[in-house]
Length: 304
Ligand code: GDP
Image 1 (tube, rainbow, N blue to C red):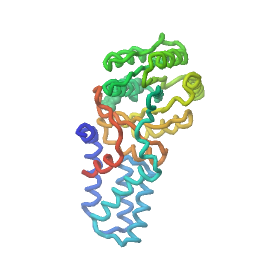
Image 2: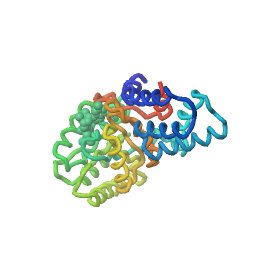
Image 3: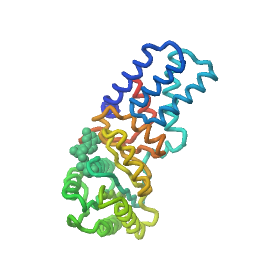
Image 4: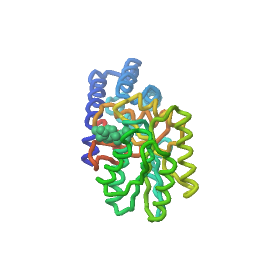
């Protein structure tokens, strides 16, 4: 809880400052107000579409309910932000799709430097602490250093890392890892993949190949394909999300480095514009700094 609050401090500060500014000169809900509201929301990185949507919905509501009081308007804005998250009924699925008494396979995708390896290490640590048997697969054989880095995280978390040589075939690493996970009756296999190959088609083919290898052994896997995004990159993260959505079936997002940015509003932009749930958030560099994302808490946190 505390960590969650602390990790969002920068986002909250900027967001609440902007909102306070907006309401400091509040006189009436006129066209100027809605224009300022849109600017405020866009400035808070919730995205253009999201800002317009909230503003339009608020206009309707103000008309219907004849709401004029500052507090009523503020509450309505909070409600609409939460709704963006709840409207599609996917919110209960914020939790990862873990199999009971069977092997769960989670694929991690995303460009280099976003925090993929770190997030895998943190998650491995959490599951290990819950008493689960965890295995990691170092299928990013493309980036120099990626394997070593995952091995280090494996040591920290106290879990085994299946890997081959740098430059090797990622699919064969995945094959070995899935076999091993089955042999050892592991609960969870987390697979690190290459973020950037020669081009998008190549990346797509590689990910498809990895999936086919997995499905030969475990037909209904991977149970999650998590796209890792760096929140500090703001709108750039949105662009990456769009591209990866075209490349593979992403089931959810891991938004990292929220502690280092005031651009946390991006969570709402992603939800509204890409219809992908944020499942985990990275709130620091430490092994315990990864948490399940709670949208309602997040939005209310912005107005604290
Ligand atoms: P990868 O290339 O996607 O595997 O990225 P890494 O896992 O190597 O992470 C890149 C950098 O981001 C490292 O220095 C991490 O410590 C840092 N990092 C990852 N997640 C977080 C986070 O949630 N908060 C902060 N502050 N740093 C993070």
